[in-house]
Length: 456
Image (tube, rainbow, N blue to C red; front, side, top):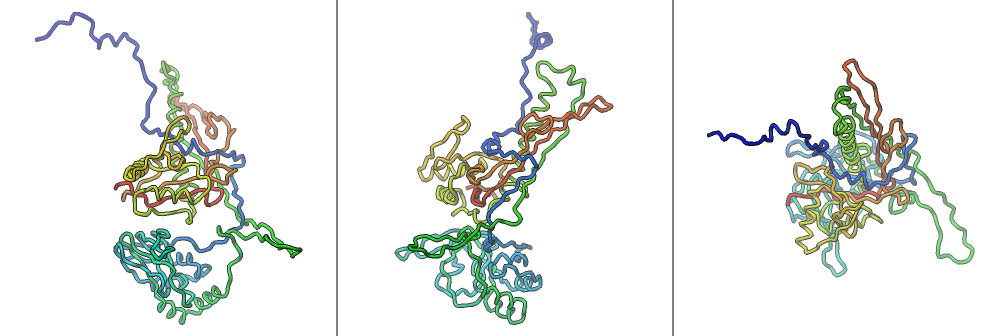
């Protein structure tokens, strides 16, 4: 039965009413904490050069592997990361050494090497996590650290001698390990003159004087009396310092002139188009500053500043270890899932960190250091991610953002919107450009907690 309406319906009334409209919304926007907290340095010339003291490479890198099914092989040139093989550039010798590594598998709890036994092999960890254990003050075992994929030890076996392992290495997870027995080293050394000559040179050579960071030493005298002859010295610099070129993110925004002329109430169409485009451009800028292989922070963490988690999830112990690697850590950056995983670990221990205020917002923190969310840090399919720790600013020899201000048609620092004309279809075009990069002034300004499990 149809009921006759006695008043004007809403559908008809809307034809005469003025609706209230929101601005166009987007789901792609994030707080972009990295862009907020980074101190920005003006780069007028487009390139920022980081001058440092001369640093000697001490063989503290990692080794890479090729995996084919269950078969794991070391990449031959990567063996030069071992101090005893540094500078060896004979591909045939390196390939012969790589071919003599034996693959082994260790289950959790297995001892890979034992303190006190002779160093009779080179050990490479291809995959897995192992604890390095030493003897404590009263005879018990104490954990000295954790090693993971790409780590190596026992390189002194290449040089011979009767050295013994100073610590025990025990598997925490299933570990795939490659070992090079001393017998294989001696056999190849006896047949290969180039390898024998190189190892003889390494035995007799003494490393240049350096401090604990690998920088060329500055000779000083202290605690003396009388009138001794003081040492002469100078501060040596890197001959080829790194230069960071500004990167660019760009797009060409097109708006039909009819739309811009007629459909501007209550919101300006061109203004809204530009606002949403700039939002997407800033999101891309932050993603690049995290993940770009040239200047992205994840790819510019010094190997000595990369530490694995002790067990898997990020614990307060792991975060304390991360903070202890540098002075004046100003900010921690993590994926929201990593922050949630850290919160679960804190709850298990009955620890409830106090939040802090950053830019008027209350955020998570640990030891008073803000723990800021950044969804640009990837989470692998296996459920692992990383947490970054940064010291900030030029005055603190930290991490800085790079940009060029004062570019033509600039609408925000380092971002320009340039009108490029109207084509034959009456479509106006605007070139939107953002110029940026990031630089790490000294290696310990940036650290990373890696292999952080977020699924437990």
